[in-house]
Length: 193
Image 1 (spheres, rainbow, N blue to C red):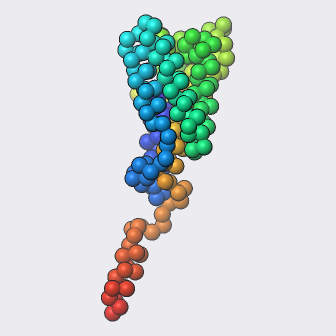
Image 2 (spheres, rainbow, N blue to C red; image 1 turned 180 degrees about the vertical axis):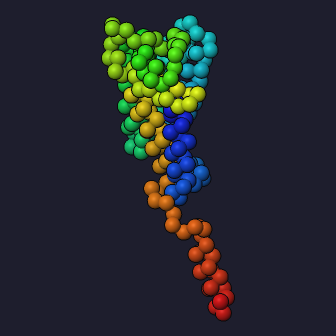
Image 3 (cartoon, helix red, strand yellow; image 1 turned 60 degrees about the horizontal axis):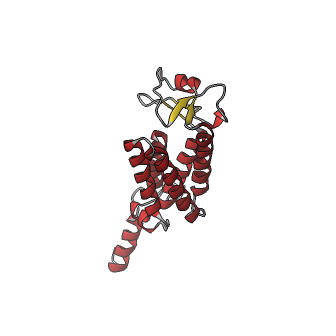
């Protein structure tokens, strides 16, 4: 999830530098945001309580995310999000947990791996290992291995945020936005200038 947060921060910065505005998020028109909240709560409760609540929370979370994605499929980035979540769901369902590559961990600078209910090391019997955590992200102090699905999710979330902020893709050339408007208003109000 660190990769997703990093991409979203970069996307927000890029949008703001290219004319986007934070107030544009209020008018983004996304449907069913409550489904995302329910998905987050399901994941959190399942992780905290463990036991049977963990798989039930994951299934409930996946259903909530699927409903949200379906309602917003025409929005920029949502198709990438859907593809990423689907790829992750397929590999987890087939293996019971997200398989993690030892090689990707080493390339990311991680020397140890602690298995948890959500992750397991890849073995020769792992199904579709290339959909597991095989992409090394070697950031200082934050190294990790992520899946191709995580990369798609990060790209989709970044694109959705960039579009939601109203980024234009063009860096403004006027060093002080709105200054020419102020000059024009002043000239209209005081023709002697």
